[in-house]
Image (tube, rainbow, N blue to C red):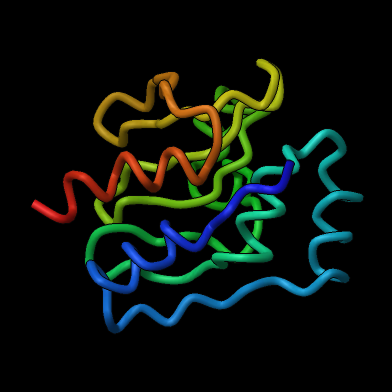
Length: 136
């Protein structure tokens, strides 16, 4: 069953009225699927329906999955191998998937560079949980 993103989009527009999220095309999604075998369908659906971009000064959703080598120094990136990142809090903490652990959503805190599992099972659930803090 396809997820209904309408309630999430409504909340995002209310909390971040100036956000200009861009959705990905079918060909862009196919390229992500081909490059990252096993990528969760919920992520692809989110990118198709919600998209990527800046959520004010709270969070940046990337326009695709980013390997740790694109953000961290080579030694740290090697330690974080298997992670594919989809966003950051604009303060150095990144969020993404651990492809070695069933594509579980994880967070890497910039202060410790440790991987912390997140309870959210989907990117939509993660953003919904974050919205609770951003609304307050």
